[in-house]
Length: 175
Image (cartoon, rainbow, N blue to C red; front, top):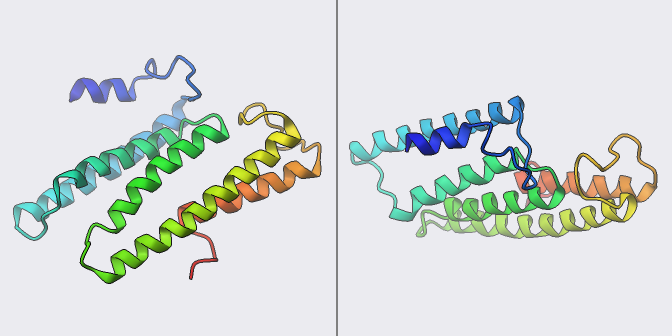
């Protein structure tokens, strides 16, 4: 386990470019995500010892995959890598929201998040299409963020940002 943690935080691990980027800011975000999840695991373990909460076996694996999706999201270098990492985190979130299967509110919240998230994914893909149509690339480093040459790129970035608001749950169109 210590070897996996050392490999995870090692700068050599993502030296080869598989569509990922690493620098000190990324390592800081990844370390922050890992610390939050470790504190959450300690909190869950404390409740389990006192007999207050019992989660199913797959709950912990879903939490680990959620942490993986968030940490890979910080290293994405293109719009499609970011989408795949967001979807990995979203799929884990659907399960984590609906972990209490007998609760009506849990099921309703999971369904609402799924519908808004699927709409946001479609909006995100449409925005990425517009950015690709205007600039010819989907990489963050190659796309001209400040020097927008055509108006269609501006609409594409607008759709991408609105979709990110919808995926994170901070959008105003929740019902």
